[in-house]
Length: 436
Image (tube, rainbow, N blue to C red; front, side, top):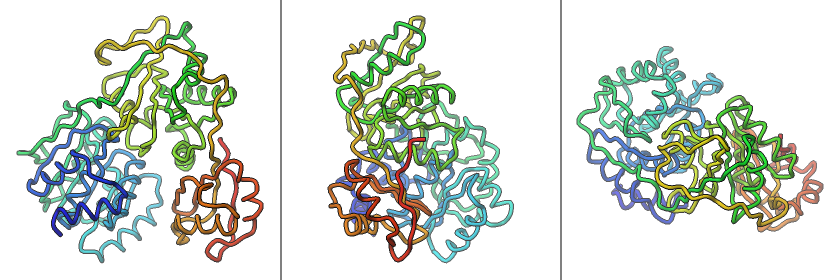
């Protein structure tokens, strides 16, 4: 397949109108070189950028990532592109992974995406043969080092004896490239320049407790576009979420102390326009696919430039507009790494009470493993629920369940109509997803 055909196939599979300049350059560079360092912030489309070369040069590929969320995201994009793959990460049932790893062996080309610790375990147990891989991607290599995974990565990569292509992605220029990576000479592609579409403001809080100022800011925003409020501690994220909920603002919660399914649900509620705000720690600053975010609010000031980069990288993505706000207490000052003169944002309520999100999220107790597709859900809701497609929002199909956003005014009637009804020949549960 020539590159033009490949790009057209990818655009159709992903529903894109065109590739970004970074994705085009990455494809061109990686198919002609053997070592590529891609410097690019989170949310810039780098997943597609490094998957396209793997699609262009079929082989067996290994992708090492710092988090389960990133592994899942890459696996989903690879599936859309038609790349056979499986994901491996801590907390996932290893028996399922073993079965999927065995099934992959029948494919001449495939990729395995995983966290370093789980991949090392599979290699030690001889479930994965590292000599089979001809392609390697270290996605968010800087974050893997930061989290202390260097020894596990070294164990894996030094056993990959037949690599033709190595790709590293990083959000920073300062990440050292370890000698054991055997990465020289390499081509560097730098796309870390700040997005011109990002506007930045500071908001003064008259007292150290910024909750009231946060509320006033949310009521002063020029639109109801989704917002993420970043804080430095789990307890703070919880306090913010509970405060906003008590004030009548739909708010999801996301931090590392929550179970994975609860974090998934929080992201889905935000993406499906069932809430307009998510209160989160910096766990949400990397590796999450939330393209719709319009506003980033730094409730706590970022600790360093890297944290700032990743938080702000959740908005103003791929040419879209976005805004970042720093809440500054009476004894606080913006860090120097914020750079330049940051104008103040005038708090002026555009509404007296928060706007109601238009959608409510419905849980359906069947998913991919039961052969459920988005089309099945649309057909079921329109036929059995008695609504038309305009009342159906975003749909998310998980392993063993699905989520469907419905217009709030239609929810009660739909749930009454579908109660006890079969979807693809099987009965299941249909219920509203609560905000807890």
